[in-house]
Amino acid sequence: MDLFLKRIQSYIPDEFDAFKETLNQKMYQGLRVNTSKISKDKFIRIFKDIEGQTPFCENGFYISKSLGNHPFHMSGLYYLQEPSAMSVVECLDIKEEDVVLDLCAAPGGKSSQIAARLKNGFLVSNEIDAKRCKILLSNMERMGFMNVAITNVKPETLCSAFPSCFDKVLVDAPCSGEGMMKKHSMAYQEWSYENILYCQKRQLDILEQAYKALRKDGILVYSTCTYAKEENEEVIVSFLKKHKDMQLIDIERNFGRSGLKTDGLDEKKVRRIFPMDHGEGHFVAKLKKIEGDIKYLPILKKEKIDPLAQKFLKEQLNWLYPYMHTVSNSIFCMNREFVDFKKVKCIRQGLYCGDIIKKRFEPSHAFYMNNDLENIKHKINLDFEQANQFIHGLSLDLKCDKGYVATCFEGYPFGFGKSDGNVIKNKIPKGLRLMEGQSLYGKK
Ligand SMILES: C[S@@+](CC[C@H](N)C(=O)[O-])C[C@H]1O[C@@H](n2cnc3c(N)ncnc32)[C@H](O)[C@@H]1O
Image (cartoon, rainbow, N blue to C red; front, side, top):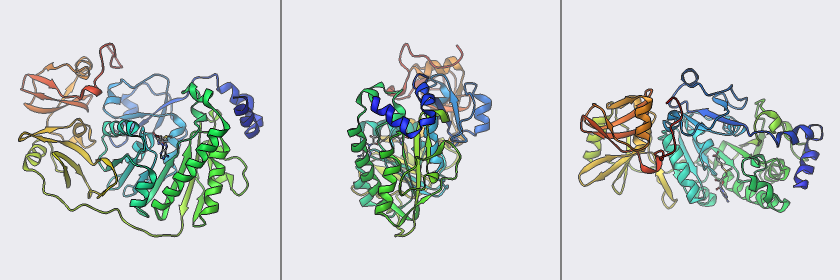
């Protein structure tokens, strides 16, 4: 631990006391508005618990309360994210049509930030750890994204299968997490120089894969939430030495500060955030591949879809998704072609609409969380108390359309139920309901 502080002192001698003081202060907390569901202006108008914009992202705000049980969180209107973490995706300059790979994606903060910027583009959101991959999937569904595939493989498996296929690749690398020590106190106890070197090697291995997946003219962003120079500036120097066709690009943003002075690196081109910069800590570097191939993700043939699913979707929506895909009895939709993942383990591609079970169609929760629900025909707005009961799994005695209905709070769906005209039976998956003793955030 002493060594950790000594190293920080050597990085920022003039600010060392200020840094030490931040270790006793509360962690910065933030949320990022999901602009694929609500505009920033409207969010500011209807949401009272934000405390000023972060300097890292135009849709990011500071908060000082835990807001995970707010109905708008359940509706996917925002993602709770440490403020400095919001800086990374800003540096990727996502365009609506980009094909993007997020190689280390769980729990989904940066993937959800990327997906919110895409229109007809596509995101492959990969996580090596199966348990964390489930959390990633759940967050991406809550936020309502459609043109996304969630894969659960080693970076090498994915990048060897799809070389030169991506416009943008993000490596938000596993790291020694020095910027997260306040959150995970174990990290304090487990800090060691050996771990930093272990992380450095793993980071370079992941970057090798990212390099493979990148197209000519593609952009690679590398980030960590640690202060260790070995995992930041030095990783970039080693990587650039090996790959003469990769160029360090100026991030051209003024959050945080320049990197640490390092031989072989123009430190002004990378960004560092220390807690004195109003976020817990991040490092970001942006690189461009100036030579190489341009290839395309393989596409699945367009499919005919089961008439039961078609009938259900027509009955529920004012429009139809142009592309559909069936896996066993489950139906998935997108507004672009489905990718053929071949042997790569893909746990979800597109919007999961539901399943055909015994000659009827059973819709999924994800279907009702999709951001195009302006188009849904059958929905009911609940007041706070009704929403509270429904989120706890209760049925509601309420008159509404018969059949499946989206349940909304202030116009934003957070779940769904099945109505006989007088009672809405609860269809929110058990794992997403609030438990007894937990209460919905807001007025009573
Ligand atoms: C810093 S976290 C990613 C956070 C995520 N980008 C976000 O914004 O929510 C790094 C992730 O890398 C994963 N990881 C660990 N070892 C890995 C490896 N060898 N290759 C790829 N990913 C790995 C971890 O499971 C972890 O989920």
